Image (cartoon, rainbow, N blue to C red; front, side, top):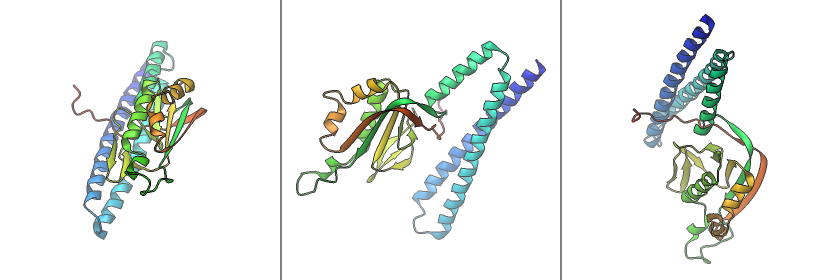
Length: 236
């Protein structure tokens, strides 16, 4: 009993540490982005950006180590208690749904690319023949509606905190730039996912008139965890 209490106490300490590091990572990341907006052509500030990035990478590594220690302590704390084992199972399942753990399984892979065979002389708007951010939004929504349990875009995990947006001439997912060809992976029942996407009147049927699309099922898909930080400022 004493050993279990110590393990639980250590687990709480690790959890607090992980949260603290997460806040630091978020703060450094935001500072990095803010500085990046205002430092074009300035060598001194460019050095500052590099230092911030190094600090961010170090804090991110500390966070991963803290999460690993927390997982080890949690496993030890519930090892001899069936009720605690069930709760730990529920926690792990919730972490998968939140995107905080890597996911593997069967599913579907969609590859999108711009149509470079079209010239400005042939069409009214060449922009119709490139992949846009809203195309990614439509497709990921259809995948989740079809029962996908995890989705990624160019190895960026899609979660409730994900932003898919247009930034000038580029598309960003989770703040990271993604370029064509774009690979969307989804873990779920392959036939259901493929049927939803390729159905008559579906978005892919419309989109394939403009851009290049390849759809294939797979029994071995790996989707990375979400590395961002969930905001909790307005949660009570």
